[in-house]
Picture 1 (cartoon, rainbow, N blue to C red):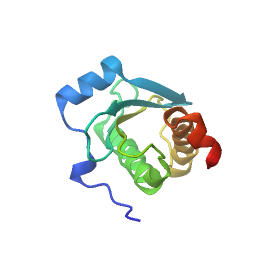
Picture 2: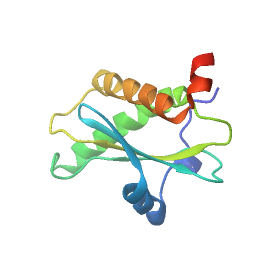
Picture 3: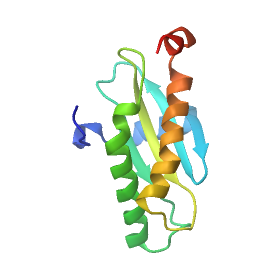
Length: 129
């Protein structure tokens, strides 16, 4: 199992990000929000991270939070359980003015990933696990 987050897994397309915000679904846990959208014909999950400027004025703080979110996601991305050939675009957004540490973000992200698994896998598949 690879714990990498390469260029091929990053969501960079302006059109895909716009579509994600227009028709995507959302899960929120505390200060962490996940926007996600099923992508037909994708080759892998694609992910982006965001920290709004209104919460952290300094770029160094925004970049630190994004770096921490990327690291937590990188280590827990294997927990995303989806049906065969079902891929998603994700946008993780941190919405608080308190600078988090790694453990705090991990405590927020794990329940979101579990809730995502519950909402994306059909019930009959969920029961057999």
